[in-house]
Amino acid sequence: MEKSLFRAFIFSLLLFFGINFIIYLMSYSLGGLFYTEIDRISIHPTHGVFLLLYPSRYFPWELIFNSIDVGLTEFTVFFIGGFVSFIVAAILAGLMGGDIRNSFGGWILTCISYISMHIAILVIDDYNLTYLTPGNLINGIVLVIITGVANMLIFGGLVILIAHLKGKE
Image (cartoon, rainbow, N blue to C red; front, side, top):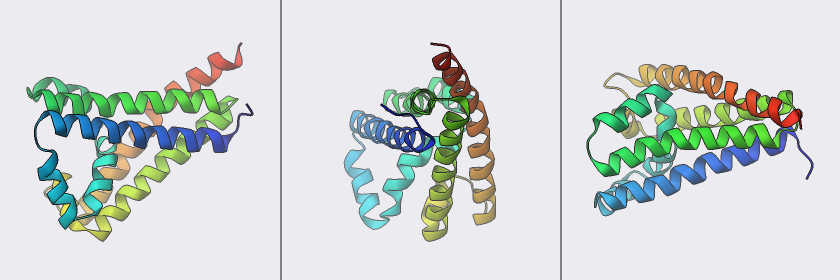
C-alpha cells in the first residue's frame, strides 16, 4: 500500500473520530446518561460533534489526571479513551505517512482539522462554550488553539518516532 501525507491525514482523522465515537457511546451507556445526551443533542445538534472532539480540549496530562480523579467508571472510560484516541491516531499517522515528513504533515493536518471544527462548533452554537470555559467565545477559542497546538506537538513526537522506526525497517 502506498504511503502518503493524505493517507496519514485521512486515516488518523477518521480513527480519532471513530475511537472518540465508540468511547463516547460506551462511557455514556455505562453511566445511564445516554438518553439524556440524546435529548441534549436533539436540542443542540452541534453538541454531538462537540463530544467527538471533546478530548482535544484537554492537555494529555489532564486526561490522565481527570480519569484518576473523577471516581465514576463512565467518566474514567471517557477520559482514558480520549487519551488512547490521540495515541492510536498518532501511531496510525506515523505508519501511514511513509516517511517522517509525510507522517508529521498528516498529523498536523489532522490537528488543524479538529481545531477548526472545534472553533466552528463554538461559533455556531455557544451552548458548547459552557463545557469549555466560563468565559466568553474568545477565551474558548484561545483555549482550543492552545490545547490543540500542545497536543499536535506532544503527540507529533510520537508520530515522528513511529515514522522513524518504520523507516528503519
